[in-house]
Image (cartoon, helix red, strand yellow):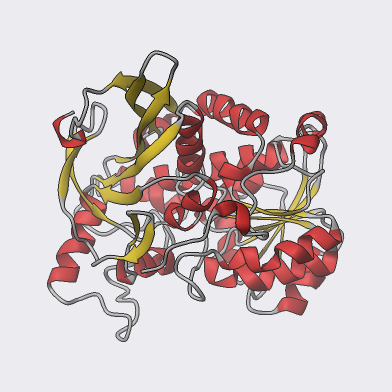
Length: 424
């Protein structure tokens, strides 16, 4: 177990961006940038298209340009160049002239891409952490002082989960005088008998074999995979679903900037039920590598369309719920409150009606990441998690999410003393 020092005593993990930069940063939001997106798969290709719609000058790098072109589509004019994410010089050469590098490839390449951004004096964004050096402290924070010296900003974990979930926890914490616990619950499902990767197979496999990170009694701990089964009620039409502990990145940043007692993340849905079943059968092992039959390559838009037309893939869903419990102090008395936020993203069927063929997870991650970039804190320097952004930035992102078909709701419940969350 690891007990973190008080967040204020950690120079490389500030609680938030400097207040002096806040008002000026809001003015700078609309500036156009030259953006290089590394990794043009299901998420990266859609993100690149969304950034181009914002008016940015965008180009991509991928180890397989032909495959990337299939994700971008024949009509896309976004340039794609061959880049090996393991090759620092190759990334620097391909991204030369950019003002922002986005790592939309696997998180194992974060540090290489961070170094490339520093060489180019560019800003940086990624979608998740790898957490191999320290399971409770993102590797990106090791570069905070270097980004400060270059007067550049790096925004990490800027997707849907982590990313949006961090913002929702922070929003609830600001409504409370004291946070006791935070719980993040995710739901992923595909109405298909065959495994269909909503993430890249490498990301899905890494999540399946990693131990969940939890924060209990102000201490970081590693828990057993697929443990602590509970039934959680998501908003309709999902309803009750079984959820279990999962290895998510929110646990590695939120306790540093928000004092709290407990934090955990659980995932449910038939995608995770399938992983849990394979784990019980002993079919998930790091030493054996990725079983390709169980973790197929991410389907291109054309393949998604074919699966739908063949009736193999009927629908898919992705949703996130955040519950924060704490106390609101007042002159008269202390009010124990439960603040709940629910985000329901467009289903596969709804995305299809928009004329797109992509998974709900890729849709959610790309759209939220595009908003993080739209409101990127260009005037700040250092490495920041989503919850460290200025309040004006966080509010702008949450407001923008509703415009992309995301149903976002908040509810505050006054609790009775000692009331158990399981009874709600």
